Image (cartoon, rainbow, N blue to C red; front, side):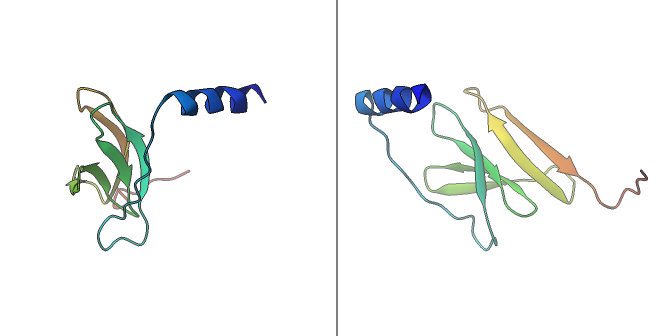
Amino acid sequence: MIVVLTAAQICTSQSFSFQSFDYPDATFSQAFGINNSGQIVGATANRGFVFYGTTFSTLVVGSQFNGAIGINNRSQIVGEHADISVPTSI
């Protein structure tokens, strides 16, 4: 209940907007982070991306699967990657 009241107080003192976006030709896209400049980072089924304004930029880090999880106000991105061509055992 306290969280809801706090969120309601924040929303009444600030203005917010909602923007929907889809990464081109992807089956899904998901945003994970945003910085104060409005740069949004996220992932599709196999690629990370940065979305800013109206432009998507694909992140290529040399692995088959990668995703961006966060971005700071200096535009430094943190993320993850996986290379399924490297055999592993459990």
